[in-house]
Image (cartoon, rainbow, N blue to C red; front, side):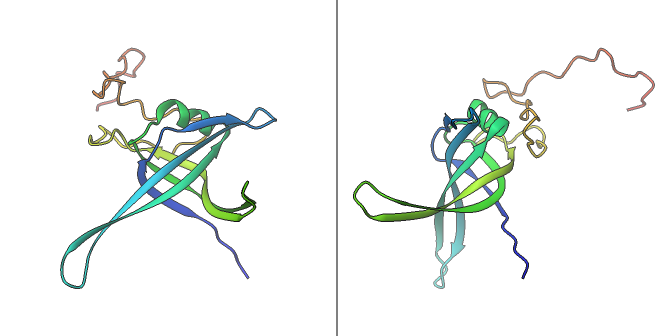
Length: 152
């Protein structure tokens, strides 16, 4: 029997990323994601439903997410589900699913459209730099070094 564990979500961070390190000094970041769904009931009323998901990323991705993301920012996350089970301090057994981030894409700032789409983020790829910290588009890169023979 074949198995497949893949999750793709688009939502907004519910809290600032929380960075920590494993004993091996591998970076780990945890954040919450809110994914909204709008639907109509049988009587025609519009309803909103929000699903809250815990996410975790490791290594360079964790460092990048911690550096550039904050509460309210939109993001696309691709990863896999992981089931965690533990016993609480009160002796009660607890469990939950979380998404282990394998790739992600910055989608711009909350409430503002990005000037261009960002590529899927890999561990060594920097985030979409089309926005500066003020929320305004960054100036274009220097024209120096471009090939003048290209007609466009």
